[in-house]
Length: 137
Image 1 (cartoon, one colour):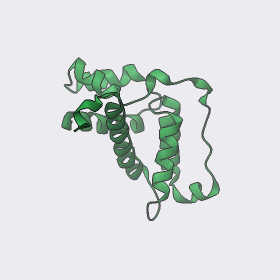
Image 2: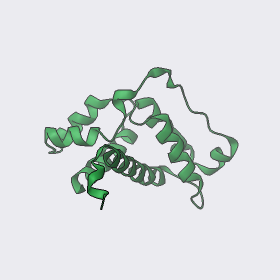
Image 3: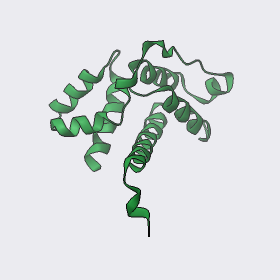
Image 4: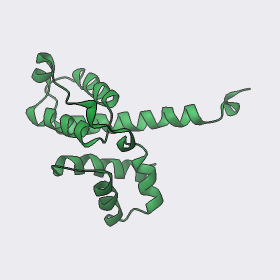
């Protein structure tokens, strides 16, 4: 789990650093950073590249959201969505959670919140796909 967290952290930084990214760019970056192919596949399963469709459009921010997020923060959220790394449900959950933070929300706040969301979602998916027998007395 620790390597996955490190890789996810590298990915959220990678998204910020480059104008255009895709799944291949991220896989290449992770491979060059020393991750094995099976680890890369596992980490990419936390993201949503396979379900991206260009018809999702751009998410516009309300006045209260614009007041809450820094300009760089809003641009980072749009880049996440347009890259296809996360779906609109994750974007909405990310914005909702960040709206509860005290003060202005910057890129670093967004990255940290996104990491938590991705890990939580994966745990829910694994739980849903797992055997319920282990929880039955």
